[in-house]
Image (cartoon, rainbow over all chains, first blue to last red; front, side):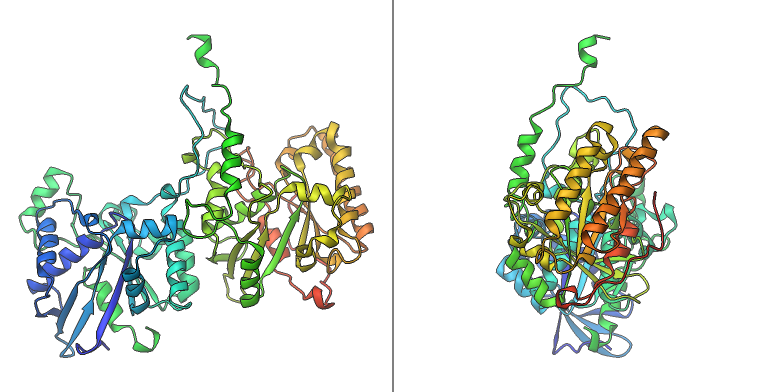
Length: 278
Length: 301
C-alpha cells in the first residue's frame, strides 16, 4: 500500500561522502522521466528540476558530482504516478551531503534543518558504497615488518574510522533524535557492479564487509524493517574507457549487474512496507 | 647495506602523545558522541535498561582496557559466543581504544595506551542473543585507571569509598599474565592479587562476593613458557585462585584470556566466549539474590 499524493512520504537518505546518494537521485530522475521506472513515472515534473537536471547530466556524462559544495538540505520532491494500483504518491527525498554526516560523526554537529528531516522521515535509504568500505584491518602479528625511517605511530583520527563504525554511530544518533524509533531502512549497496565477482547476495555482502552494521540492523529489525539492495547507478566502472564508451551507447539505460536490483526497487519496497511498521 | 639504516628509529615520544589522547578520552572534541560516559550519564542508562555492570580491577598495564576493546573488536568481525552486536552509545570510545591494534595506526605491533585517571570510565555495549533466547546483555564496562586499584590494594582507598564496586554485577580481579609468567615477578603478582581481594572484600565493598572472577590476561605469554616453568606457574595460579576463593568465602572462577596476542596461535579475543558466558549470569545481588555457582561450559587452558 503506498501513500497518497495528498500526504508526503519523507525519505531520509543517509550516507558518507561519495557513497552515491546524489548519483542515485540523478539516475532516478532520469529513469522516471524517461518512462523506465517500472510501475512508477512522474505525475508532474519536480519543482527542483534544475538541480535534478544538473545531477542527471552529470550521471549521463559520467562526470563527477560536486554535491558537497551545497551544505545542508537540498529539498527534492517527486510526485509519482503508480500504475498498479492506480494512485499517486509524493516522495520527499531531501539530498543531504556526506560531509554533513561526517561532521555529525566527528563533532556531533547536526544542522537544524537536517534534524528536521531526520525526525520527519518515514523511511530511510542507507547508502554503503561497495568499493569504498574502510575495514578495521588488524596489525598482523608474527610478521617481520622493519620500521621505515619515517615510520611514526599515528594519532586516532575519527575521519579515518571504519565505515561500519561511523554508520552504526550515525544510526544510533538518528535513533536517539527520533526517540528510539527508526523507520524502515532500505540499505543500498552502491557500485554493486564492483563486487559481483564474489557471487554474494547484497545481504551476504553487507554481513561480510560490514559485520557490525549488519548485526546492528538485524538487532533492530529482525529483518522485517530492513532490506539490502545491490544497485549500480553507473552500470559499470566508468573510469575504464572501454566500459564508459560501451555504457555511453545507451547512457540512459544502464545494465543491472548480476545479483543486483533496479534503482527503483528500494523505493518500491519502502513504499509498500505496511504503514503500521513505518 | 648501511648498518645504521637497519636500526629502527628511536622510539617516538608516543607515551606523551597517547597520554594526551587518553586524557581527553572523556568527550574529545574529535568525535561526535562520548568516547565514554561519566557516572551521571551511566546512571541514565542504568535507569533505562538495567545494565550489567562489569568492573575489571587490576593494576596499571594489566590488560583491563584490552579486554573491553577486544569484545568490540571481535563483534566488528561478526557475532561470537552466541552474541551479536546490537548497539553502543560509546562507539567512538571503542574505536579510539582499538585504533592502536590496527594497520592504520602506523604501528608494527599492537599497543594499548594506558587509561588516564581523568578519563571518563564507562563504556556501553549492547549484545543480543543470536537465538533470541536470552535477554539482551547491556553492558556498562568500567574502564578505570589501574592506579585506583593500586590504592585499594595498599589500603590508601577503602573499597567502600568506590560505590561503583557495590553496584557491579561482576568484578574481575585481573591477574597480569605477563607479570605472572615471569618467575621474577610471579610472587609479587600473587601478593598483589591477594592484597587486592582483601581490599575488595571488605564489608560493604562489594554487594556480594559471588560477583568475583579471577581474570588472567595475556594467557599467551604463559603458554610460551618452558614446560617446567609453566607447571610452576599453573600450580601458583591454582593456589592463588584457592586463596582468593577462601578470602571471598565462595568458589571464584578463573577465566583465562589472551585478547590481543602478539602470537598468531591466539586469535583476537581468545577466551571471550567464556567471559561473556559468565557475564550473562546477572542475579540481583544488590538486593540479596546470590549468584549461582558458575560452572563453565567450556574451558581454555
